[in-house]
Length: 117
Image 1 (tube, helix red, strand yellow):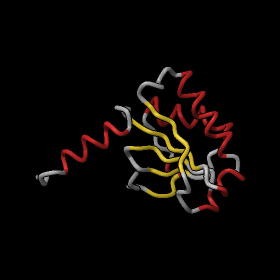
Image 2 (cartoon, helix red, strand yellow):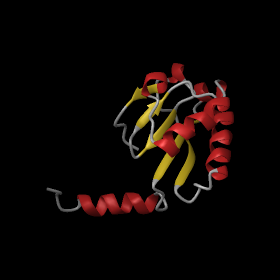
Image 3 (cartoon, helix red, strand yellow):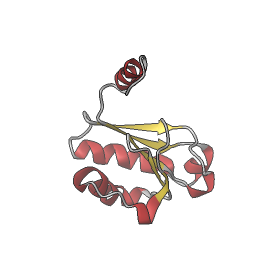
């Protein structure tokens, strides 16, 4: 049972994200930037656009996600799974698994599940 008001909040949250089906957040905090997250962000945007998924998948720079020593960090929403040490040269393979066939690569990258956006 959904409490009154929660459904409205859920709908507003969807509107806030522009109606995208999913969101990929790339940490651009200081530690992640020093580990190359700016290159990961650029590669992620290019790859999503090349797949013609940019109307469905939003790619955004975020603040620190923690743990800072495991960056660059990438969060897939709505699942809330945070992947660690994602390199720009792995983005294409990474997105192939995440966006195309639904694999989640937990053994290689996962840090935490169920994180709130």
